[in-house]
Image 1: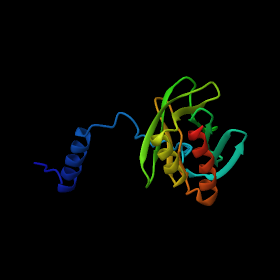
Image 2: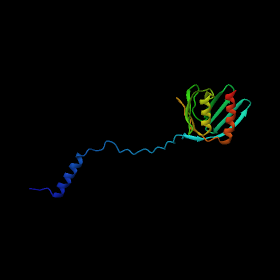
Image 3: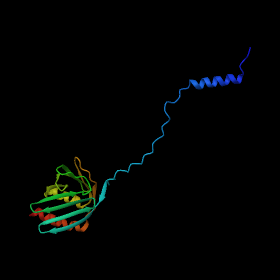
Image 4: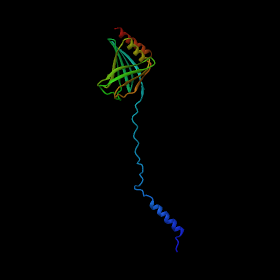
Length: 178
């Protein structure tokens, strides 16, 4: 009787096991290298403005300006103050209801307003005791922001207005006495 050699037996067992293994149906996929997406343009959360003041006839005009955002405050006859906030490179869609808000050491307040066709947010208030207090808060420094549906703009850091601001405030006080 012929006996199979142990080497032949081992080889046939190995080949039998290899045949039982499932062959891969597809070649393994290599990851496709993609160019990285450019990061989205960063919207600064806060920009710092600088004050300027002027008095023209019966109007007291103050501006806090930065290239990304400008706040103009005009106090005029009739004891009213108007606020106009522009952010040229940002989204202030026309015809939206907005809120112009202030936060500072002197106080926090919100003014209801609207955006206009020039994409400026505007609001107004009476220069009564509350209105004068809000002007003083603003001159003391803090942060001004605009919020509303579809509105995207950074907050405007408003520095203390110093002596020039106090001189300008004298003009505002005269408006409340007219």
